[in-house]
Length: 189
Image 1: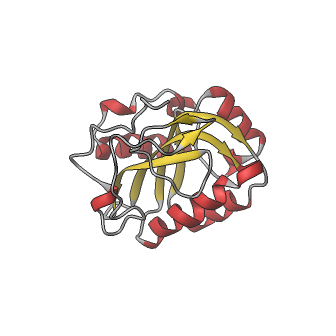
Image 2: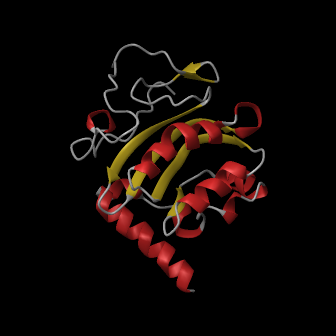
Image 3: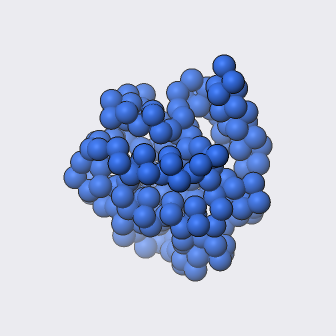
């Protein structure tokens, strides 16, 4: 796991550590000091910690004018033991909502497991995005099934084309446009 880095090809377009509106503004990273772990395995130091013991993230891109953010995740999403959604919602999402972000693209191919609890924070998040949305992209099949078992599909958009999207082939604005188009198509159908 220590070799899995957050997607870095967009780092020339955006850096959360340099974005004054980002919850990770001013964060300094080490390339050599590994401190965070998932399952006692060290993860790459470029991932951001937000309060969870098992789930980490990287804001890959945020565009305030169009109100969207792309966030990559790694680890175990555990609401049952650690209430990860509470930390994600309170420490990251609320800050972004306050800056006008209301469309969230969460990339979950490195989320290894999901352990659900209640859906209160997801419902709250869904209500707060108003005209926006929350899209789950490339979550593993067993993780997506477990999330749906806890009715998260009431509040998020996932599955279909979003399950196998080759997102790395896009620039951030192109990825947003692609996902926004998928979502608009689903809403019309």
